[in-house]
Length: 242
Image (cartoon, one colour):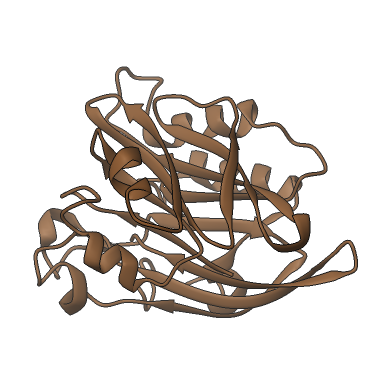
């Protein structure tokens, strides 16, 4: 199974060829335009849900057969929580998140993520949280959020493979401020259950995405295996961001 997160400033339809090229099973796209659900589901084998954001564009979750979005849970302007079904009846929760422009002093990007973590249904269903957090290890509240996710059994897929960067933003930036290669950041993340043993996470390059005008955020791919209810599932995570 391949998981992807990508902030696509041009939306889904204009970058559909790139999105299909991820070869993802489930992905979340931030800055997805109105009409995304109808557009995606107009392509055979795809299901999609869309949550309007604070500024019209929003968060989308897409799934490709044999996986399918079966239900939408409580969602908000910054996040979309879905239940995804797969082969042999396997289900898990996939949550797309987008840290959006703050509306007040207590509404920064990390505060929005904190609210998401507090609102999620933490039950026996395996949960993935992925998206553009617009926050990094340089922010204390983000560090607290990561610890909270860890307390719920989730790990950062990238760090599980590559380790914690000695110096920010590390060897694999996921976004570039103002599309400039001289301003790299690492703010897009995928958090997965610690029981999902990841074998590899690959990060794209500035040349592939920013230099071509597609996005100032970069894609990541990961591959791994998990054993749940005595059934082994394949996992691949595609992360896009700083």
